[in-house]
Length: 447
Image (cartoon, rainbow, N blue to C red; front, side):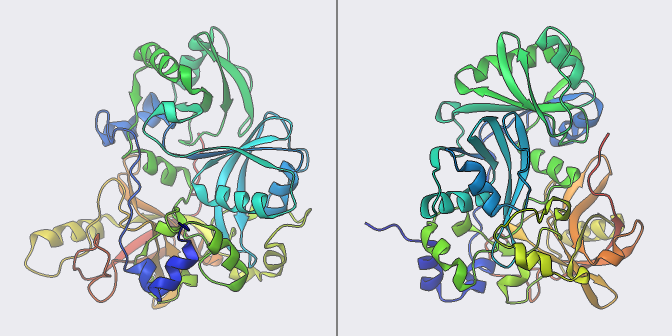
């Protein structure tokens, strides 16, 4: 029996906009406990003590091996691979032929001609497609898909971060940690077990993401939690993890730019209808009826600095030709507290009801986008809101017109969907709400 492709699904539906905007939402549930204590204290612990985050279960991990691995990655990625090699990591971004964002992930290279791609599956799927259909001597060695069972995975992947992280890890290492610069890799020990680590400071505080063979994952976790008792360690659950992404400035909710265009059709015919791309859902006040309005460029998402025109790659010509005024700027928006209170208050009155905001993460579709206005003019889009305990406010990341990306700029966000809401089962009947927001021009916080 032939597996239905994404293109088959689009053709059978007949209306791409309705398929994505009105269809069911396949919520991603982190395959870890939602909370180990409560999400407020778990957020606070990032800033005050040290957290343990089990990242072993929710990310796709694709292993590539062969003499053409770097050529393949370079042909598809906006990044330069000059000097890239063993014990290096790189945040990796791929685009379609028009320079529009498909996905990002982190590349880990531990040995020559062997790279793993870790993150959401969109970037890895694009790479796999070209590895299978292009002229590359590359083997897709293994695909680790999300699973609640560590035995289903090749590696454990943990994160220890916060002000007390270095002291805890040094104790477990039996001595001072090696000097691992930001976004570089190194090795140290957790008791008797050697791990490979990346310094990426997702929370903005010291600490590392590290991994090793899944067979020893439970033992490594127990060693960390036992030693961590003296350092006030807190385990982080699935409700808090996406908040830390938003606080750290990572936009993880973008519709991959693959659903339109004849050049992308072969890829849609390769992708299964049941893939992550086939289960996407869009939503929000950006209800234009045109799916391409949900596409973004690397500039919009703060990845412009990664684009290097020292190599040919898919989308290069389009990115080179983009006029400066078309390049959005990524910012953080801080939502007006009274306007947020009004949204909640509407549930307790006889008047109009606004779209509820769930806490601590307010997304009700997979890839939401809300309109941002200056007066009556559309000047950008906002992605899903999250409640930041550090800010005691709802915040969201956004792409706005670059001349407005200045601290303190006042704008308006339209929260909720027009005409009472879409046909998504996650959307109750409601009226839209204009929310005042203030621009923070530096969405990535480092401590």
